[in-house]
Image 1 (cartoon, one colour):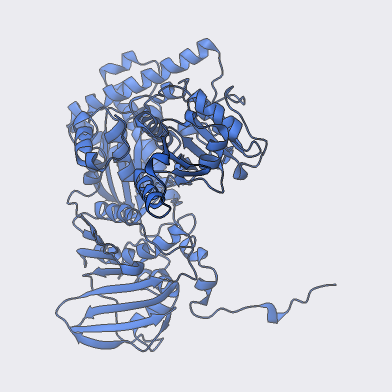
Image 2 (spheres, one colour):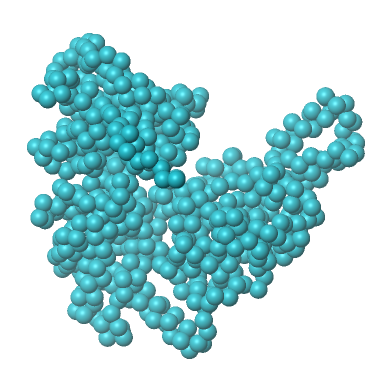
Amino acid sequence: MQDNYSAQNIQVLKGLEAVRKRPGMYIGSTGPDGLHHLVYEIVDNSIDEALAGHCSHIKVVIEHEDIIRVEDDGRGIPVDLHPIENVSAMEVVLTKLHAGGKFEKDAYKVSGGLHGVGVSVVNALSTWCEVTVHQMNHVYFQSYKIGVPDEPVKVIGDTDRTGTMVRFKADPNIFDMTVYSFDVLAQRLRELAFLNKGIRITLEDKRSAHEKKHDFFFEGGVKSFVEFLNKNKTKVHGEPIYLEGEKDDVFLEIALEWNDGFAENIFSFVNNINTRDGGTHLSGFRSALTRTLNDRLKESKHVKKMDESFSGEDAREGLTAVVSVKVPNPQFEGQTKGKLGNSEVRGIVESFLNDQLSDFFEKNPKVLEQVLEKVVLAAKARVAARRARDLTRRKSVLESAGLPGKLADCSEKDPSKCEIYIVEGDSAGGSAKMGRDRSFQAILPLWGKMLNVEKTRFDKVISNEKLLPVIGALGTSAGPNFDLEKLRYYKVIIMADADVDGSHIRTLLLTFFFRYMQPLVEAGHVYIAMPPLYKIAYGKEVHYVYNDDERKILLKEMREEKGVPEEKINVQRYKGLGEMNPEQLWETTMNPDSRNMMQVKLEDLVEADEIFTTLMGDNVPPRRKFIEDNALAVSNLDV
């Protein structure tokens, strides 16, 4: 029987209904990313005012019950009557898709949110929204329920300033969760302050008794950004190279500085949007950087020592850089704007960097010599490593389809249903192998301390006997060849002892994942197992507790409520996973129905980079200060 398909099946969504019907089309998702995107949409409007020269201070506040308030001192959303819609322009902007000043070039020459759906989408996806505008010596106000105005725009007072304030409560019927992360918002707002020098952005969290506040203000723009990223690293040259200019209506701002490390750390932006997936501007930057350094090499004393030209990896070893371009008509791939597609921008960036960087090196020969020495060492290490591999004629685990010998694999072949425990020591590994569910849980035992990748070149990383099994078991390769599509287990669980050595091993593994498998962490595949710290038994009654506070509470309950004599209670402190038999390890740490695990999230990339540099890098004073500042917060430290 054929289904009827007629005009009655064609649905017309009016006003903002389409946004509520398909929110993912407008904000990417209804998860945490989409929730935070609401805030960015409002802030981006304030930033556009700043780019146009009309705003100097933006304030973001997380109020109680996760209400968001964004204020600025810009011109204020226009409130006069719209000539076509016949209502206040403010109501048009808040209730109509594709309505805004960004389509009219006299209002905004450059803008991040070019779709014109920002504030109206926020309004549509909020339980309620309030907008207050200071303009023309009056204070104007309008409130909305699920995108619909309660009443027309009205005057509620007088004022001698200008600006806009938006307050809203995200709709819990739309979003999976409506709790904002202070760190996630801080990451984005810090970026915006770096990318727009001279603009002050404050973030306040008023949800608890201990209020948090960040004040972001950077006169140096992206140069300050690079200085911030490199502050705990040993620099190769004095201060960041800063290049600024305009070419073919594209404004470019680039800062770069080499340090004595081995990882490259490059951030790229288009119209203040973090292009995490790169694009033509980043391709132009990388190409021009390699070409310029190779041109300088030919004129230097180092040319006789080199058998071949620099590769892109040589040029970028230890490089920290920020590439920011402002493009009048950017073409992004997807609404989330993760990648720039304008083909002409590659040539513009390439030409600009070739000219400007060459001119800088002509005027600063000492800096050029310091950079060339760094890059020559990188090239020699790469060539030596390649020759060593050719001589041994051994395939590395990166090229081999074989799995590490100590891996006890699971029978399930669907990666989304599989998990792997990376376990410290053969003893704990043995218990884990016997206690696991073989259908979906794999076990990879590690032994001894592994390599600190923060201080090591990539060629040493991929040949390290402690890391090779991890790379081989996950199946993704590592570094520039990392491929998340080949991941064999969707849960990668680090399971180490609850002592100093266990903490060190966790930190070493996390450093490796962050530096050489970052997409694995970003996608939420990495977890920390939480084995219990104590086993508390009385007769046949057994409890497992995970920290000292839980232990104290339980013991008090047993003594005072159940009347159990203290001498009858057996308290066992687990010093290591190997002390648990397979059944205990399964029930406390590996059984999905009863275990505790922490998911490792990468909410603030800049702060994460700083922490790993501080804890695992060569620079001792920042590490000493970190320990002094945080020593009193440490618990369960075995001495």
